[in-house]
Picture: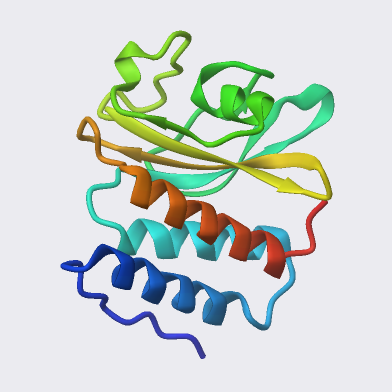
Length: 164
């Protein structure tokens, strides 16, 4: 059985390396995309400091994003193609790191406490399958190191899951 270990946060690269290793262990014996998304969101939310939301949106009919497993307050269920940070990241096929969500055109405020956001598109076989979305209650919570490492966590999720 998997047991999360406390990770020292004083060395960011070591922190993320250990988090990635824990995620690999957590997902090692499971292929179900929803179960893996649920555990990925829970591990990220309970391990990364200063988050108020962590979860997934999955692409459905007409490129609409639909809420998947998450941790945090209830969230917007459907996001139209190209709308908000999640829709923009999916449409642009690139990670978006937003220092102040209130300055983002067309921002969708699911939780008024959110101030910064990091959204990583889930791309497999050339198709955008959804996004991994992290929100924080403080501006500029995410830096380039966070972005790179969360992209790596998304890749671990994709590799472990039967999705797409």
